[in-house]
Length: 115
Image (cartoon, rainbow, N blue to C red; front, top):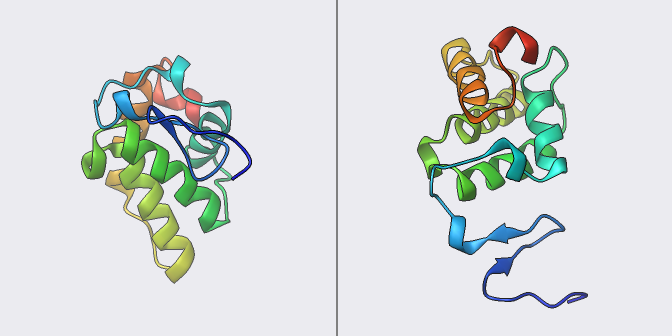
């Protein structure tokens, strides 16, 4: 292992996981690491990521720091990864919930800005 990890900061990649803040459901957009912020914004854009591993990296962060399996950002990332893996249409309602959630946590003032 190339770096020391304390019990409060555990990660399998370069994005730290704040154990004290896991599944709190209180996500502040200012506390989202830049890489996750970038992937999340791209998931909301007209040209979302096409690499499922990148999408799953964001899903993992949102699962841990959001509300677990019910977190809208996590659910949309998983849905998009499923779409990429199976080439089946994605759930439009789930996408709309994702956009509303991003507005609620402060990624944008309105959904249209995200697209």
